[in-house]
Length: 485
Image 1 (cartoon, rainbow, N blue to C red):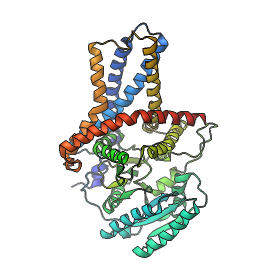
Image 2 (image 1 turned 90 degrees about the vertical axis):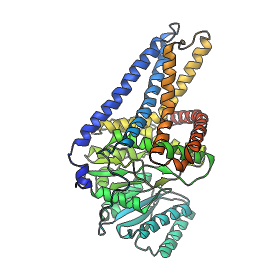
Image 3 (image 1 turned 135 degrees about the horizontal axis):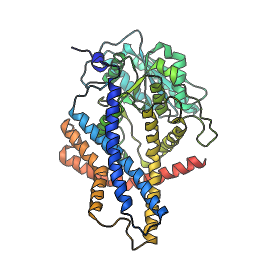
């Protein structure tokens, strides 16, 4: 019987060839629908509209249609993956055996923190430590609390709580605490500082966030899979949310848990060994990271200069450029983060992410970046820029309705009905895919059964309809503020 490593790496270039086929299939499908729909749309605009107005109607429509199709086909791919036991899963199954781990070279578990809720951070660390202890796996791991906090009272609390926790758990020598005096390059600099100090001691590092939680089994499984795949530098866990009970966070958790499995599987289907890195809940080969991921400051003479904020996307691209593989373990369980409690908190976070993603415009053109990673960084930009495109489109349509009140944008024809049905499919069918996936995996009971899950989808859809225009305005404002400096 083949080992996991033989099973996965039977041929060095197999996944690369399959990736070309899969991506070609998906993007040709998107291209064909795009061409047919945009051609029909453009040819059915009122001839009384001037050319400039027609262009301002058609171009945003084409961009938005492409973006919706990308999500739709990703969900279809995820549904396909759920029916098949594919050869290209970095983790064959959640129940695959964990191989014996190396006790001489421990894996570092990093908690980079910056003025966080100390009690919450240490409670999460304690939970993970206890989970590993219960499974007799503590010998394989060491914890590092990497503090960049600049609030003196918080730093004092961090140090005192660390000592107290080490005493409580008898964990002196297993849980380390470091304060950095100068917060150079923010989180990416914090992790790289760890690498310079202690990286040689640990072949792998599991990078967490202040609100991350992972079970002992999940931590061990990540190390086991990494050891069996020597060409892999990074394995990203899927991110599921839990831990907050506000209305917004419950809404966020519902869509994350119901639709997440389909989208994670779909992303894996066309990413394969060129996965993105989402900043935390990830295992990284330490030496590869040290060799290729010491990021410079951007100095292009514009408003996007400075530290690279969305460093994780860039680090994955640099690892791929160096010949390493990066994978999404889409079927891994018990990888948790805390959702933002309110829409305001979510927008504060998105403001940072928006600036970081816009910075990628400079990095996309760097020499040696793979075409896949260029596209993924462009996708990160579009995740915010499409809001501005949508707003412009709505304003243009409003202008046409005022200036040409007796002229509909599109006449009422059979094609109009087809366009309406296509829009409904692109906007809502993924919800049915998520519901079907939950039923197939016997997870529907976690949502209270079919009826409660269906009611939940209805409520989530209503909230999304209300929130999406608000996010559109926020994202457009972010882009204007960032580009204006």
